[in-house]
Length: 144
Image (cartoon, rainbow, N blue to C red; front, side, top):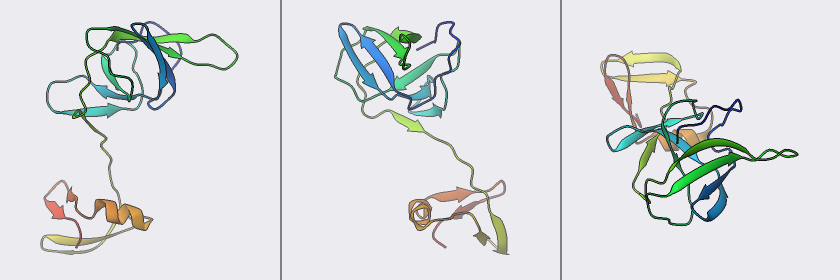
């Protein structure tokens, strides 16, 4: 969905009105880069002039189908923010969001270490326990 020349900024997960063929529905899309491969990097904004893919839960439609995206603004008419075509219904598309974890190293012994102030609630600890963490030098298995 390359955006036309427009001044408004579109964030990911912002409510948009999609018109695909004869259907119209509102959705909160997650934008990702359009690159070859099976993993696609999540984009926080729809960048002007760049190609992107908007992933939404919507009624199934078959490609190729013209698609228009409008930004809904209270008190003013809907503004056209993107045009494109439908790519298809692919439930296996993987959108990856990269984050950087920071903390204070307390103890380092051979290939394991203790890092403080990396997580601030128990849900984050349970979420990242099975993930293998990497540093610039080597990888560290979580849960230790």
